[in-house]
Amino acid sequence: MSTISPQMMMRRQVQSHRTGGDARDVTVDRPTIRRIFGFAARQKNLLIGFLALSVLASVVGVITPVLSGRVVNAITAGGPLSTIGWLAGAIAVLAIAEAVITIGTRWLSSRVGEGLIFDLRTAVYDHVQTMPIAFFNRTRTGALVSRLNTDVIGAQRAFSNTLSGVVSNAVSLILTVAVMVTISWQVTVLSILLLPVFLIPARMLGGKLAALQFEAADHNAAMSTRMTERFSAGGATLVRLFGDPGHESREFALRAGRVRDIGVRVSMLQATFVTALTLVSALALALVYGLGGWQAVAGSLDAGRVVTLAMLLTRLYGPLTMLANARMDIMSAVVSFMRVFEVLDLRSPIREPARPVPLPDGPLSVSLRDVRFAYPSASEVSLASLEEVATLDARDDGDVLHGIDIEIPAGQTVALVGSSGAGKSTLASLVPRLYDVTGGAVELGGVDVRDLSFPDLQRAVGMVMQDGHLFHDSIRDNLLIAKPDATDDELHDAIRRARLTEVLDHLPDGLDTVIGERGYRLSGGERQRLTIARLLLSAPPVVILDEATSALDSTNEAAIQQALDEAMEGRTALVIAHRLSTIEAADQILVVEHGRIVERGDHASLMARDGLYAQFHRTQFRHEA
Image (tube, rainbow, N blue to C red; front, side):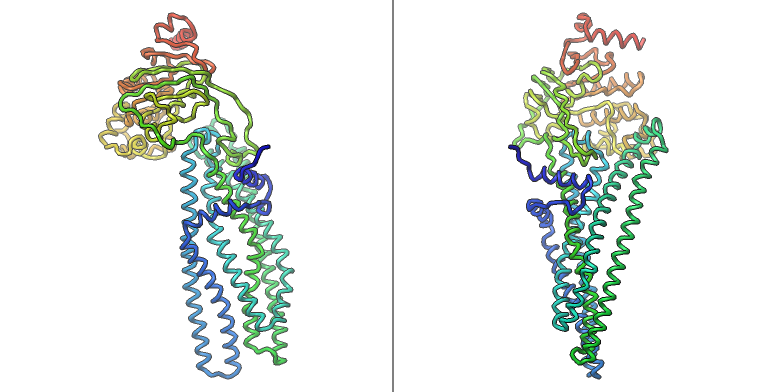
């Protein structure tokens, strides 16, 4: 019989919310609460001070009406003036104290809240960086960013607003009722009898507000995702070439319009809520003045106590309202925590070994031994909420690589050729552990890559892909990713060897020129050469080139090929090339089809065999002729 883990239960609860539930549908278990307070414990001292000041503020708020009532009694009794002066001075001191406490509470609230945001954001950011490439291939960027923004801030409110509100309002309510009962239990009881008239609609309104706010958060996350995709250079180009601007506008306007309509409804519900509170408070105040005034005239109550009751009454309904809706507020905050936790609970299948094996010094061989590989399933690397789908794709495509055996001696070059989709890039991605093998082993210098530390593996293997990524940053920073301590001389040397010196000389800020998102301010060939310069700068012992010259014209290709030959000299290289002319000098050429190696040998022997490689060669050169 299968069991359901707490993490899986949490994901189902959160998914239930996403498909139409609200905060009232969420079940919170003890492990989740302990985990929430585990994050809060990092702010323990600040949180204790924050709660202490909140309680103190409630106490001051109750003392002031009592002193005000005594001032009224002193005035109606005709003095003495010293008593009136002393009471007025005490009220002034309390007012100053309340102002100081308010500022102190706000400072502590900010420190606790912002500290919690920092802890949650860094935890999610650091964790996401450990996730495999398969996670990013499936996840919608905007949905993931929403966890770092909207949900983290929602979780923060649990402590900076909700928790302090529950504590301070509970204390204020207890003190207020206690003081009111000592003054006139009859007035207190009648005032409380009016509460159902207010609290029942308040709870109904609170539930509607929470549901609307959740729906608005989902729409905002969807708009964020859409803007992230459409406002990138690639996305904008795609829409311009193939998209319908009218359709794009309508889709966005549909979401934005729903958020607008929700905003209007929320505003009206809040206005109704405040109006109801004001009305009930006014009715209760009329009751206090009427009944209290009658008791004062009858001699059972003095005027000062009537004033005290009236002032205390204004402090009664606010805390009661907050406490009545506290569960809704807490559930809303907990949902945000749970949405953050479900990301943190998604464990990467690619993990660093507890006791890494040292990487051998010098040139490294590359070995693939009976390698089998299947892409990880969606449930292993993704979340439905991050893909913005109801359920994850449950299909199993099976193995895409079948019993691959490759031996690349240190310092030699092996080339992979084959049809599109044959498995060449997949095979190459196993060497730097972008994915882990399903069966068999990948070894560097005789050491299984799964036994190497991530820093050693990163230093050992350099890769230039067909569409090398560049950040919206300067040329310098894009290069320093490969070698953070590189000098300007080393940067210029890498640029020279990548044949980019002339391009750099014409840029306005040289190395400090910002190249735009994905490097779109450079031409395709210039972008590719910059990624090659990055490889040349890192100078790893193992080099993987995945269609590294695909974006270059014939003139640039020849120049870059010389730079690549220089970079590969004395290094182990695995080259995937569409242009067979660039790999004719490889020590060994492997033909990959349907995830299997069907031919292997050097250029001459493969041409003599007149098999698939020879067919590819003749077809390509016939087209280029």
